[in-house]
Amino acid sequence: MKKRAWITGLVMVVSFSLLGSDEVNGKREGKVKTGLEVLLEYPLLLKGKKVGFITNPTGMTRDYRHALDAMLDEGIDVVKVYGPEHGVRGSEQAGDEPGSYEDPRTGLPFINLYGKKPGEMVPLFDGVDVLVFDIQDVGTRYYTYIYTMAYAMEAAAQRDIPFMVLDRPNPIGGTKVEGSVLKPEYRSFVGLYPIPQRHGMTVGELAKMFNGEFLEHQVDLDIVKVKKWKRKQLYSDTKLPWVLPSPNMPTLDTALVYPGTGMIEGTNLSEGRGTTRPFELLGAPYIKGWELAEALNDAGLPGVSFREAYFTPTFSKYQGKTVGGVQLHVEDPKRFDPILTGLTVIQETKRLYPKDFAWRKDGDSYWIDKLTGSDRVRSRIDAGVPAKKILAGFQKELKEFKREREKYLLYP
Image 1 (cartoon, helix red, strand yellow):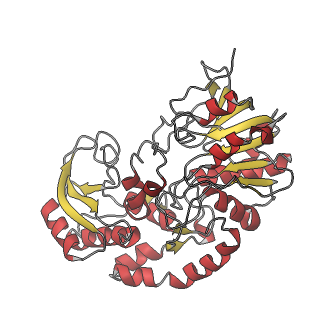
Image 2 (cartoon, rainbow, N blue to C red; image 1 turned 45 degrees about the vertical axis):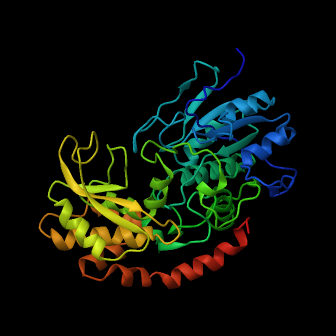
C-alpha cells in the first residue's frame, strides 16, 4: 500500500541528527517559514533514515498539506506515527487516553504516547532511526505537548536515537515572560520543569533548554529553525494558517488568554469547555453575570473588556446547566496581561461569592497548585493579597529565568 497520510488531524514522532549541527538555517526570504517547510526544501537531511514522527493536525504547511503527506511525497521514509494528548487526529478530549491502531489509509502504525513515561516509550521506538517532532505549542507551561516532547527526547537518548524538532512560532509572542515559575515539588504532567506560566519560547528553544538543563540523559538534538520570525510577532503577524492544536484551543484568541484563564480550571468555575469559546467564557450557576462583569470592568485591566454572558456547557463542568458569567474581549493583544486577568477573575469571583466559590481538589491536593506550580497563588488569594502584588512577588524568579533562557534563544 502506498504510504499517504490521512490529513484530517495527525500526530507523529521523529528523531534525527543533522551531521552534528544543532540547527538548520534556510536561505533568507521575506515570509515566515516553519521548520517543516524548511525541511521540505532539504529532504535529503532524512535520506536513508527510518523516521518516527510525532505530530498532530497542526503539522501543516501554509497550503494546508499535512506534514506526513508532504514528507512522504518527498520520499522521506516515515515508518511510525506517534500522538500526544488528544491523539494523532486531535479528536480526543482533555485527559482522555487515545488508542493505538493501524491507520486504514496509510497502513502505518499510529501510536499513542500520552500518559507514558520515557521508559514506556523506549520499546515503542523499535525500528526507528530518528525521531521528528512537529506540533504547534501555545506558549503556556501547562499545555502538555512540550512534556510529550521532553519524555520522547529522554527515551530517544536512552535508545541513542537522534531527535529533530521542526520549530514553529510561539503564537503569543516570544518577548513576554510572565507568571509564576514552577517549584520542583509541584511537578506534574501539566508542569514538569521550573519555567514560567508564559515562557516566551518556541518548542525548539524549549527542547534546547530541556536538553541542557533538565533531562537525565542528553539527546543528540537538532532544531530546524523557523525562517524570518521575530520574537515580537504574534501568530497573526506571520500569515501562517492556524489549525486548532487541541479541541479546546480553537482560535488564536484562545491561545492568547490561556496563560491566565487556564487557571480557572483550578476552581469550581467553568472555564468554558463545552462551548464554542473555551477560556473566554467563564462562569458558574451561582454567578450573576452583570455583577461580575461590572466588577471586572471596574478593575481597569489593560487591553480587555468584559460583558455579562450566559451559556450551557455541552460537557465538562456544569454540563447541561445554565451558567452565568462573563466573556473576555481582548481589544489590545499587546497591552493585554492574561495572567493578571486570570487572577483578577478568580479574586473578584471569590470576593463576590465567598460562600459558593471553591478551589478544585485533585485527590489530596489542589489542581490550582499544579497549574500555578506552587501553593503561593492559592494561599495569597485566600489571604486577600491583590493580584498585582501576587505578580510582583514573582519578579525575582522571572528575572533569573530570563537570564537562564538567553543561552537557548534562537531568534532575534
